[in-house]
Image (cartoon, rainbow, N blue to C red; front, side, top):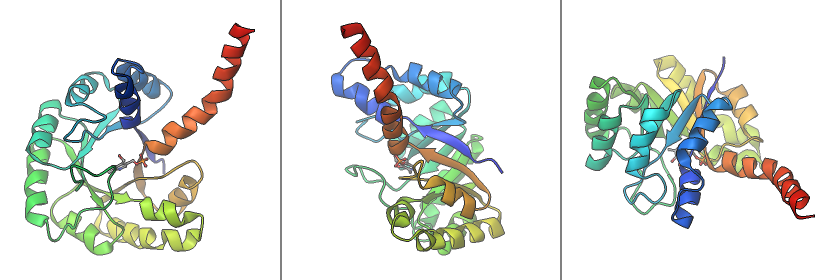
Length: 238
Ligand code: PXP
């Protein structure tokens, strides 16, 4: 079964914002990424808009031809945004305002009422819903019971332990995926996946529908490009 690749473009916006102008041009980059074969585009607008701005989300919703996945904590401003742009998928993430990046999944039992309400609103607009969770079968069951279409497995711990003991690193994910497949809830995954650790994850997690990858994919793309670009400069400068 094919797993879809959704490219998280937050880092492109971070790079652009660091110079206060429009290079790299996020919309052009997204068009190119799609033309290179990406199956989707992921954005994670944070309340302080430090990388993806709300205006980027509006612009991208008009040009993305594949699937747009918008991630975030469903506070009022986020809900207002996603209901306006109507992406293919919304992934609910319990990120705090000051988090550098997402660092945990939802407790889908403790927050079931809150999440259930948000899921109902999104679903009534025809938006596919996914809930970011740690690899814990209880949390998967909780996500299923509140009506989410999918879970997104938080893969930081898998990626972290992969180089130490990959069988141990995958074990909780394997158990969680088994529970998800038994319940019939879809499986996405993301965080710290990269070219080295993704093959084993895909091999062991059956019915992995989608991965969203940002940090490593952008870093790896820089490295794949350095030699080519340096040679071009050298040729011009000789
Ligand atoms: N999924 C969620 C919920 C995230 O917050 C992030 C990072 O923004 C990712 C996936 C992608 O993680 P990475 O940038 O490490 O590939």
